[in-house]
Length: 186
Image (cartoon, rainbow, N blue to C red):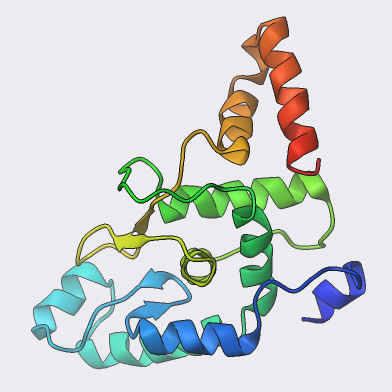
């Protein structure tokens, strides 16, 4: 948290350690890397899907990763700052995933240049999305990633897509990019 206070004393905190604890109580499989696995699978499952040597090793690392998420206030805060620019939807859109968003958050914060370190974990993004009221759906039982029910018409999503094509934009699209950058605080 020192990094947040050092760089931005006037920043409104959108999430607290107590909020992170609450989300972790609601989501027992959420850890720093995203969604983990329950302890009900056969030993071979953990070797195949978790790249650990044993179920016991996986469970030990899972507990450490949950503790890491409990301490990831700065990362969750950066995610919440990004999520303020994302519109919630009720329908599930299977093209907006947590891992892609995690990278978008990092890029957004590198552009803002408010923090020394823009890194956020997949788990921090999922935790922040749940806290901010987004519908979050785990992709499948073996993936740490989740689908986030958000509009592709959100200013920040459109900004990211235009930025990807920045070298080939028409003048009209460049104007839209500048307008979107202003809306999202860049």
